[in-house]
Length: 516
Image (cartoon, rainbow, N blue to C red; front, side):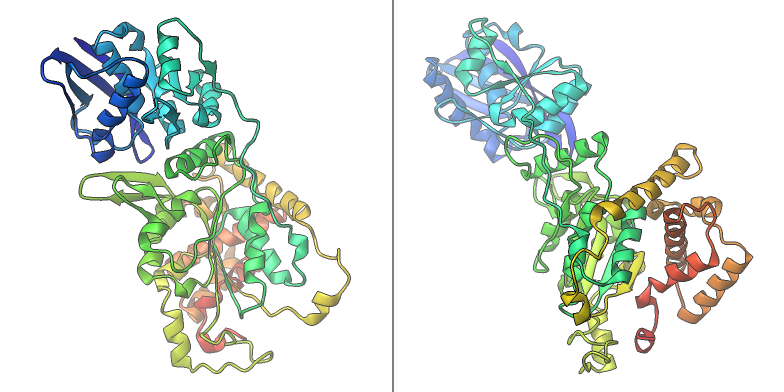
């Protein structure tokens, strides 16, 4: 007898329907799984045999062949267990196979028949809706993220605790409950900007970066507050849209980073990997490919503290996602593409001792060659891609001992950020630009919305000549100037905007001129 059940495979975030075709014949007991299964899938026969035995369906007199079609797509993970078990049950005559025809089944089985949660339920269910399925059965522990798709795509999603309850439901002998939102969305705690004393230039840089979606690098000595400033960035950013939240949640689901029982990720991610992170941990790797920190920070913030201490190869690997907003991971047997468009926020010392350019506070003990060697740990092409590069001065003691409450809080600054973002979104909606944030404006967009006047062009020409700025750095200056004008509610950019934007690129200057 032949029976077919349906499930879904993932390649990166791309869902692919899988038909579980099970043939049962008389003969020596066997259980073969074909169709490019990896080890976990091949082992499913052990779990399925034990789980079916728990509901009184022995397989010792059946020769079983399970084909996972399409056969040229690698099948990875334990997500196929439930579909294999139900297809097997129908093939041995324990259930009408027609009952499996319009339902997608996802879940890992234990030897007792309990259904355990699996990764990537959300993107799989999005694929199920797109491929015409009307119903899906998922583990109860995945119910909260499954309910997101049920609400957005109109898919009937049911949750189950064990194989027996699913079989009873399909036979019409019981019921399964619908997936329900947990009422708990993922919101990370956000630190307030009012905690930061002094640092007016650094606070302004945070505001500009948040308003335009710009990458930002803080350069300053230890204890200047670079990390403290960086941790305030998420509170300045606008909330995720429904579409953005769905993609971010899908990435975290595939990575296994979504808290159990939680729904949509509503707060923009803030990822803070240690500088000892491997290339694979930062960029993504594995077989099957898994998202790395740069993808987990998609539509959020990727904070790299002590930037020169990271592996050079890992930092250079960020070039593609910083430019393209996606990263492709290719292995011998598989490849996958993950979204990867975070705001890059980084911090570094100006030299090994940390005091180059701050001689008024403490004398730097590094030679010029040592400083150059230290800076060279971060490649020029990466630094060139960072829009804002700011010297962070040590905090004066008067700012620390003064009365509290003088600094602007996050909510006040955030209102200005949202107003500037609204201007950018309006230009995008009118078709004036190809991106909704200034940091992503294409060169042709700059000609329309950030073209300098005659005075501005003269200023830029002088800067290019003095500092040897690259063509990419020239475009970065225009984008930041556009954001400065947006924060002031102005349509045109001024020469003052251009000068201020250029001043935010300290690493374009010669080392001996930075303190000037």
